[in-house]
Each structure stands twice: as C-alpha cells, then as structure tokens.
Amino acid sequence: MERLKEFDKITLPDSRNNHYVLTNCKTGEQRKYGLEDHYNQIKSIELRDSVPEDIRSQFNIARNISLYSWFCYPFHNIADMKSFSTLEMALRVRLGKKDNFHNMIEMAVKQGLIKDKHFRHRKEYGTNSESTTYVEQLPDIISRFRNDYAHGSNTLDDLSIINLCVCADFINQLFNKTEDITNQV
Image 1 (cartoon, one colour):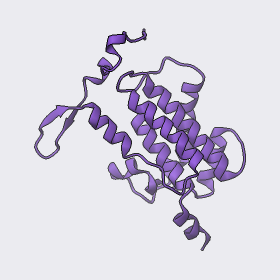
Image 2 (cartoon, helix red, strand yellow):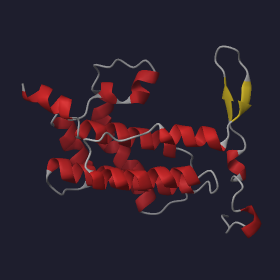
Image 3 (tube, helix red, strand yellow):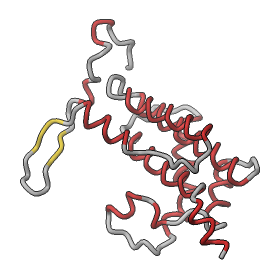
Image 4 (cartoon, one colour):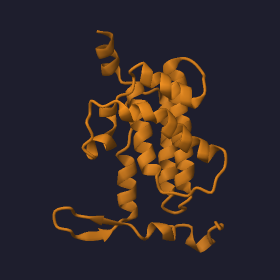
C-alpha cells in the first residue's frame, strides 16, 4: 500500500528506483542508474517550437511529474496520464475538432499526419521505417493505456519516460511544418 513519505525522507529516491543499472554495451560495465541519468533522459524529450505554447507547457508538466517519480514511484502513472491528456489536447488543436481520444488518434493516422518512421523507439529496435503497422495500432494501444489510468486501476509501472517519448514523437508529427509542406506538394 502506498503511504505518505516521512518528512525526513522527502528528498530520498523512492526505494523502487534503487534497482536500476546502466550497462555499457561495449565493455559490459554496469553502474547504478541515478537521479542525473533520470533527469537527462527526461530533458532529452522535447517538443518542437512549432508546437503551440499551451501544448508545450502542458507537456512540460508531464515531464516534471516524470522527473519527480524519482522520489515518488507512482508519479510515473500520473506523468503518463498527463502525457496522454496533452496528446489529446494536441489532437483537438491540430484536427480542429473534439471527438473521443481513440477516434482522434485514428483520424490523425488516416490523414497521414503520423508515420512509423518518426517514432524514435521504432528506429532503436530496427523496425522497418516504411511500415504503417505500428501507427495503425496506436488508437487502440494509446487509448487503452490512457483509459486504464483515467478510469481507475491498480496499475503501477515505470513507463513514463517511454510514454513521454511516444507522446512527444506523436505531437511533434502533428505540428511538423516540413511534413505539412511535403504532404501538400
């Protein structure tokens, strides 16, 4: 059961974050994953300047919540929820309409605004960048995650950094000025 942290432990990492290590793929050397590593991962996940400021501001709230998951592990889930609500906000702005989350993701995919090749984690795993399989699955995947958090559950995971990446890559595609010009030509 989750409990309020003791006052003298507020600035200490949540003990569930003490089990992560980073491994140097070349040397096999391992070291403990620390707050600076956590911060640097989150800092690297940014929205482009072409994304409206209100959306960037809300996304930065999600980033900060994810950052503070170092001290309170369940904040990962709160950061996920904020990431997904920011994505929903971005979809409403970009599509110019309000619909349910699943349908708006589906519209963005069908309109060709979202492509597999622009998701960083798809490249990391050597996925065929021309495939549309991943984006066609996004309406179900993202809305299922969001609904799990939004409608109450016991889910507790550490996916906030991954979900920040997915949402950032999605939102950046929605407001990619170069891509818009290319699609119009």
